[in-house]
Image (cartoon, rainbow, N blue to C red; front, side, top):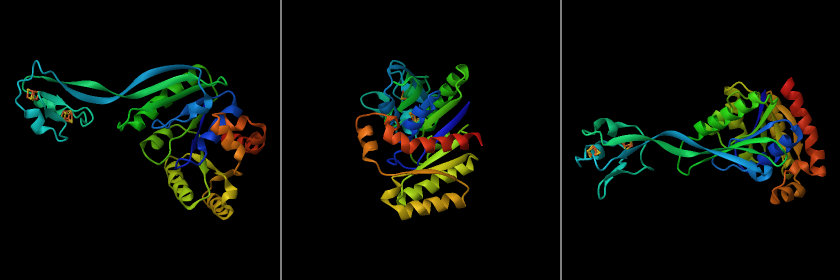
Length: 288
Ligand code: SF4
Ligand code: SF4
């Protein structure tokens, strides 16, 4: 089983539009959305059967006030000021880092560490019949990399059990933990760039991560005709850096219309004429 990861370094490049279209053309593949802060892929794939599972990463302290003798030691020693005494000693979950020190110093064992609910992950079936895995991190949680690893792990197990040949993943924006985690065990990265100064800068940063992980990649320029000179610059940069140029997509009102009605853009025949040759380039690169 191979995995293609679609990345962009920033949001708003049209990454999900392209990723969903490639999933549509691939037919026999598992679809994953690793943007656990704001998953958009399910909006386009419209899953019709969803099972959801709790995700826990780390622990939170809990004080049993029946046992607590109000000595105040835990509140005095917590480096994160996560314990208040209003009116009795209690932990503020959002401030607690789960270090467990309060449980160790409590003289009457009134503190226990409990699993912290950090989010949820989902297994579903898209409206075009593809298995879909995605997740939601709870607001304020910091374990995006671990949640991406969880989604990847269950998707890969499912794919192995069902003998699926391919996973296509819509990656998270940026270059943080979630992106690093999403790059694990990937065979090919598709970089989606927009032709602007900031788009080029973000593309270079995410391609550096890709290089550090030793994954091969190709680049697509989306809405290339909005800035032809920047597009040529990106193309030349890709050539100099051994990143295969997979194609360019012109600005299209039709793509925007398809996204506005929550449809997979590549399912439209006119858009398919633009994207199908790029998908064929991706397939060639995957097996080369
Ligand atoms: S687990 Fe650590 S951070 Fe949380 S309340 Fe106890 S000492 Fe503070
Ligand atoms: S250290 Fe234990 S007994 Fe003392 S205030 Fe904290 S929870 Fe209560």
